[in-house]
Image (cartoon, rainbow, N blue to C red; front, side, top):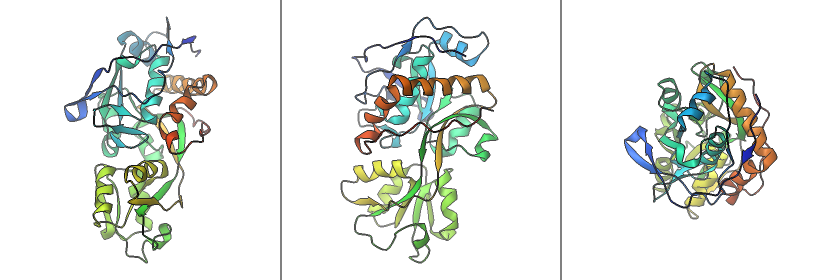
Length: 298
């Protein structure tokens, strides 16, 4: 499938209010400082495809996180911002949908498959690691980024140097319910010492208060938490997994998957992928990552 010519539009001057259905609250369109991604004009798609339906509706429902600094964070003004949010805007633009046509739903790790299967969102862009268990319920486009699981500890902690040191230190480790990191850490920590919350911000609070000794998730998420901690935390910087972030879509929608992959590839060519990174995660990790090799659509 070919993408139509993409024409850039200026970023919207006004802040637009969007519905966040998961919590019955409202989230506003974020302003990350990035120029608005290109929006396809007069684009047409094969009848009956997801792309045609979304283009005709003029809206895209996006599941993302509101607690992930640099990737998906709801600020004090209510605006969702981050690299995941910018990736969603790139996909919307290729569908001919501008920023004000996007509706964001808060999507914690444990409900990501549910919101897709229950038709609450059209895509999930939420630090969403592709794995076989999740493929049983949803399909994935991408990956659009490759992360690695790491540990965050108090700034003065010298005992925890990697996952192998956790058991000897009898460390209490916090992660998020339903996440890949929560499963991965089980081989390094006694079950009684694993603490789970719905969101990572609660893990950061628990680390600050001494209730846990470490927080584990993907390194880029931890970098955001370290930055927000204002010197209270540090990254151990000993990644021990590979975490390919994909875009979750309804199970079996191969045409939509292929369209998203083409869109991601085009965003590298036209510079919008780099702009999305530089305005978000790039403020902490300046080097623009290479787009990973896509996994087969199925």
